[in-house]
Image 1 (tube, helix red, strand yellow):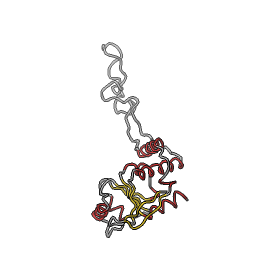
Image 2 (cartoon, one colour; image 1 turned 180 degrees about the vertical axis):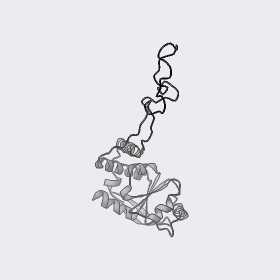
Image 3 (spheres, helix red, strand yellow; image 1 turned 180 degrees about the horizontal axis):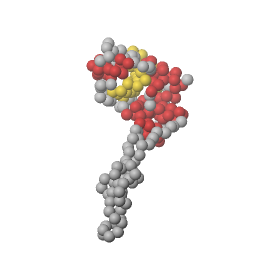
Image 4 (cartoon, one colour; image 1 turned 45 degrees about the horizontal axis):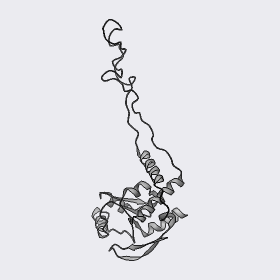
Length: 208
């Protein structure tokens, strides 16, 4: 079981916290990480690309010229895919790219992602995140005090509208509740800033 210092807003150690091996100390399965990230990206795809076949393109109701005698190839519609302005053959149509993965697979991948971050010394545990008002400069000042001014995922135990509103304008900074944590968000950020309460919430949620 790993043990990390708990940092105050002044970047000073105020205690220690144990990180369970079942969450932060598993053997990393990179193939599983790849699979879950692909699933996350596929589920985010809108799938709204659409093209028109010759039956959907307007016009083309009349035969453009007679069948024989013109010296040209026979044609029944000026909306054929062979003609300019004609329909598209085998073009994309709206579809759903999403698919589901078993919960055990997602959990195994998430624990692998968290273990990667801990192994790379990219996990910081903070005592609490207290801001006086929901303003971006408050969050920026807090992160700068911890030398985490960019590319950081802040993990909180539950909904915090003030913090989430204040942090959303900071480039590279995201806020995630424990219940919404996913592999893609963990791997997409360089550092993880986790509150002490969030660690306890993760133990309760993930370890039952």
